[in-house]
Length: 164
Length: 99
Image 1 (cartoon, rainbow over the protein chains, first blue to last red):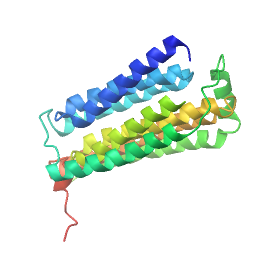
Image 2 (image 1 turned 120 degrees about the vertical axis):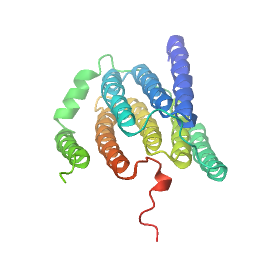
Image 3 (image 1 turned 135 degrees about the vertical axis):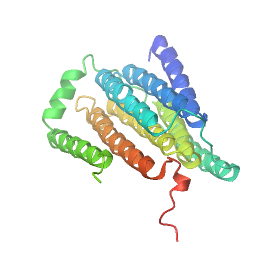
């Protein structure tokens, strides 16, 4: 990694971690969803730094443009942006114990592993991605269309007004 | 490589904390999305390490984003249906099956 990449990685990483923490901790639902949007955008930047440009673009389109907006609509239809009670203190301590255990284990394992450094990136990754989707990954690629259709039909069936 | 894995582990732990402590269904969905993105970060990082020309990790990440879109659509539809019936999205109040 070059110096600029390292600096940008640290900036995006801190931004992602802070906004994720805010999304989880804030008592306001609207702020939580907006912080999720910031987290997803910062993560798209990290994807770009890892030479996955197409994944970064898909992340912005689908997550920030789709899922966050969908969540905002669900918030508007279900409740006003007033504060929502957080968990009681006993559940909070239990949650932090489990989260510290999981996070500590993951960080410890990745610090202990002897992985090679980042290899040089492909100069242009999108043609390889297209080839992979139309050759080795063709079946899952087609399958996800069916799953998306099923999800749309299921969502419509769930929110449809029942005729009395 | 290691910094990416460490960041991904921290983000996953934040997601776990959110799912366990928050009681609002939409916030729990937000936390699940954070966890899914931490997993996607690992997939993209390892895609560059192993067989970068096959793009297996990146294709997995894109398919995972698609699955997450399905999950969010169905999950939010469920939350709306629940809100219509019970006038709440707090999962602690949904105890209809409790004896």
